[in-house]
Structures are given as structure tokens and as C-alpha cells.
Image (tube, rainbow, N blue to C red; front, side):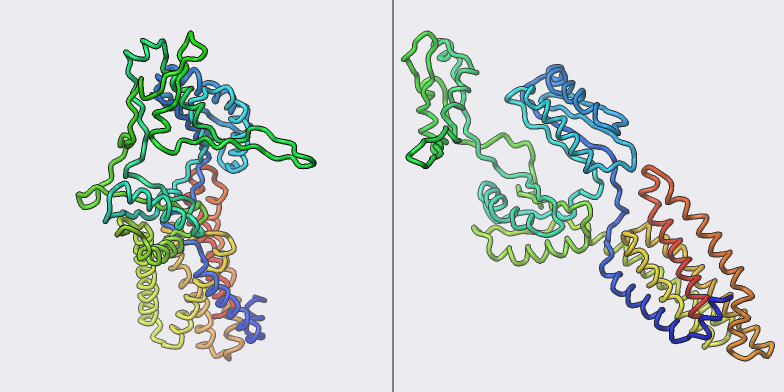
Length: 481
């Protein structure tokens, strides 16, 4: 074979090529993404809208139906399903696999914006989000050492902004704790006596709590913007809000005369306990393309520097860390792979009874593996359970190709040929067979790449890794050996 002849006649060129592959692989390995499972981008987008106090039938008629009608005109929509419950609307839009979800989310936002004006004023803004299995929280911390109110304040003002600035962190959600709430309990008897309604009282309170632009003032050649600053800053101000009495143009009644106003806390919807004590938890979510292990390491470093500066004796404790599970899983696969490679070399030595021949095959193993990491890096394949499984699956063939070529060369040496001619003739005799063997195994796995749907997302890394490893093993057998 010409590639074998070239390898024998140009040993320096082949050595430089092998060294280049090794150096690229050593650079690529620490930069490969690490995750427990492959990146699975499911083409489903959810649109959730809150409408507190509304019955399911009302939610469906006023919110769900208009949103469904608006988003149905987006191109590429495969299926739309919805769910309406007490105070909440959920619309799920499914696209065909392979669709650019980020682009479709922009289209959905445009359609939802056209409907937003027709929704009730007291309904929440529709929230559009995509389903991403890899966007689950990778770390959870608990806060302790202070009151729930104090910890909530520290978490929102100090910890959350600091962690969200870390590269690779998409968001930090806080659960538990107490949320301040001004409660207005109307006296039904008094509002009936004044002829008031709940809506009138609510509008009066909202009308007094306004901050915004109120026009402009022209002074000479300058135009000065006028801004109204009228936010509630104390409980007494809220109590003194004047409510206009119907039927009288100049009669007002203060809010405190018809209602009990108190500074309290919102009703708890989430309770968080750590070691049996009420606590506050922070869940750290990573971006879809973030490296779980690297992001977790950055978060730990930030928490270590942040903890001594927390006020009020607040302490942060790590509750869960998925990067540990990923590291343990990958480490286990790596250990089994190394053990398998070592056993293969030992068995090979027992059959060949030659340390030199065994050393040749043993050298091709890491070269083929490192070359595989290089191709994985340029193909955006992450190190995960399935890609490592594919690498271990191809480990046997990595040895087979080299053994076949080496044994053929050894046989030619036994027949009396010199080293150079034995290498050329031996490789040429089995080169076609080795290439056919590699091609047959690549042909078995590579078509999985062209499968669509969730199966492609799961098994594509395995198929690519098996194909890459066989190609690299074939290259090493026909050049380095």
C-alpha cells in the first residue's frame, strides 16, 4: 500500500504527523465539554401565563385560546397543546426535530406580543421558555445562621447577582424564605355603606402608587422632562390613600377607615428544610452549552470568596452537586477503559512472547485515543456516558488493527525479508483487509448520525465516537506500526 510505503520511507514526516495529532489531542482533551448525557435540544416551547383568581374556563376563554390562535401561524409548528387551570394557562408548542428553537422563540414572542394588549390588565406577562433537560440545576446551596427574612434579603441583594455573573450560569433561583407583602383587608360593611366596590378601592391605590414620565416643560431653548415620583414609602402613606366616594364629587374617605392595612408577609407557597430546620435554598442553573464541571468549579470558587463577606452570620452550605456525579461516572468509565487496555496488552504479550512487538501495539493505543479526542473536539462532541461508551466499544478494534498489521510484518521477517521490505510487504498484504474491517464497523454505526428525532440526539455521540476511534486506529496501524 502506498500509505505504508510512504510511512516506511518518510519516518520523520510520519513522526511529525503523529506528534501533531498528539499535541492537538492533549490541547483538545481539557477543553472538551463534560456532561452526564449528550446535549438534547427538544423542540418544544412552553408559554405560561398567570391570571390569579380566575377559574379554568375563564382562563381558557380569555388567555389560552387567543394565545393558541396567535402562535398557530408560526411556520414549522407540528402540534399545539394547552392546559388551563385555576389562575394559570400553559400552552405547549412542538416543532419538528432539527428546527432552530432560538429562531422560533423570537417568532413566538412577536406573535404573543400582538395578543398581549387584548389580555386582561391584571394577567401576568406570558413567559416563553424552551424545554432543555440540561438546564436543570447543577448545584443547590442552603442558607442558614439568620432569620428567613434576613437570608432572603442577603440572597437577593448579594448572592444571586454574584453567582449570575459567572460565565456559564444562566440563572439562580431562590426558594423558601419570607416575602414582604402589604395586606389590605377590606371591611365589607363599611365599603357597602359608602357604596364602594373592590375594583374602585384597588384603582385608587394603584393611582396613588405611580412613578413615571408626566410630559415635558419648555424653558427657553431647553426641553425638560417631568417625572412623577409617587411610590409608597411607608405604611402610613398607604393608610392615608383617599378613596373617592361615589355620588359626591368632593367627598373622600381614607383607606384606613374602610380597611385594615398591615405590613406582613406573603403566604408561603414553598417550604425549604435542611436537616430539619427552615432554610433558604439557591438552585444554580447552567446555560445549555455550558460545561457542567467547569461551571460548578467556578461557582465553588465564587462561594468560597463570597462566604466570609456575608452579613448577619449567614452561612452557605452545599446541598447537592451534579458535577460530582458526572466526575465519578466519567472516572469510573475511564478506569475501566484503562484496565481494559492494560489487559489487552498483557494478553497480547502472552501470545506474542515479544516485549518489542507488544510495545509497538501499546504505543498505538494512546495515539489512537488522543487522535479520537482531537476529532471529537472539532466535531463539538462532549465527553459523556455515551461518547465514552462508544470509545470503550471501539477499544478492542484499536488493538485488532495494529495486531493484524504487526503480525503480518513479523511473518515476513520470519520468511527472511529485511526490516524495510517486511514492513512494506506485510502492511500491503493485510492493508486492504484492515481497511475493510474498519469500514464495515464504521458503516454499521455511522448511519445513526442521519437518524432524526430524540434517538439521534442520544446515540449520535456514540456513533461518531465509534467511527472516529476506528478511523484513528486504522490510521495508526497503517502509519505508526
